[in-house]
Amino acid sequence: MTRKELDSYCNDGGFVCYESQMLREWRAYAGIVQRGERKGEPMKLNKVQRNSLCVLTTRNPQMVESERYIFAVFLVDETYSGDKSEEGYVGTRSKYKIKLSPEEGKSMLFWKYHKNSNSPKKTAWSSGLHRYFEDEMAAQILIDIVNIKKGTKDEVLATEFLRYFCKINEIDINKVKNPSGALTL
Image (cartoon, rainbow, N blue to C red):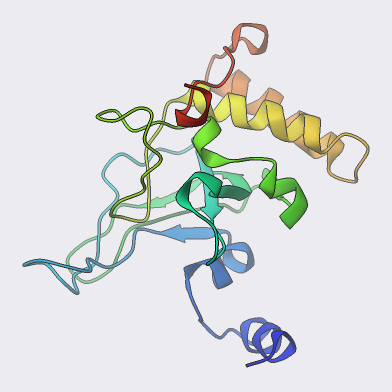
């Protein structure tokens, strides 16, 4: 399938993979269990909250896990934890959603911000499609997006997004610490 055919298929509502529809629907799904007794069952999202930041990440096939990058973020205003027949999801209808170009995304490495609690220096995704993190990590990501988006059409939106997120989550922007993810240790 060519890139043009893939784009046409996706634009017509086709589903190739989760990433192919995330930016069309601004919705991220929990996924389906891949192994074990629950294989094939929908996954649930247990800790989802409105007004949290959803960070969409990926890595290209030739990339190692430490090169996983952020390609978009949005403010969650729609949640569904899931049940036995449907997987959970988070989504948005708000204006607070930002796509990053591939070049911008590759300067936003996920592991700069996140670390695994059991092995903080190890950049391993392991299983599952999602990770939970604190609001301060979200603010760190938004601060870096503001810096990346300076001089672009998204500069004002990125700044508004950061300010709004910090306001509703009672975060003092001036007191946000530097990222302390696995790549910084």
